[in-house]
Length: 189
Image 1: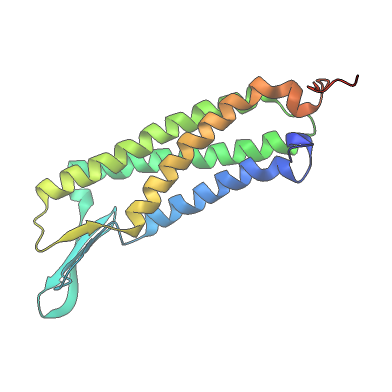
Image 2: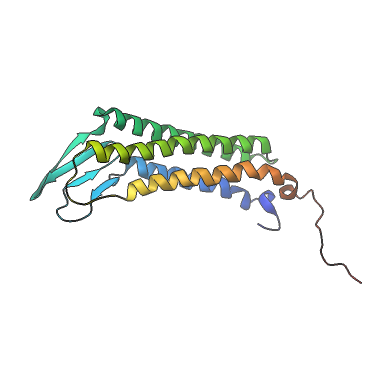
């Protein structure tokens, strides 16, 4: 990859592949029930982006309550969902941009800007959820924000990092396409 850059056919799919991994992590975060879980015995509380479930200390059935009844629950779900939809759009645009034989570098910079917007929406949802959840939902024992919430943050961090990469990539257009003569620091006597 160092020698050929993104013009090399196998290496040009790294960015869309990373966006695809971000989409998979976003799906896990949206569908996962592990946004909040009880950390210690008794395991009486678990929550997702969509609902909060609890059960009695003796075990038994989980009683779930939708978080969509709360304004903050709808806001957290909507902002994270908008960020995820923008990520899916960026994924589709990246596949189109990198499938074309000649890379469209201005198009790639637009994908980077859209990724930053997606990251802002994702982070808004990821911040609204724990702040309002911990103040408005009664929790017993020690609780932790768990694996699905971590996948949400991983998606947001990937959006930010890939946004920087997509925005900076056009600055090195000539080097990537091989239009620059190499500079040698060693001169023969």
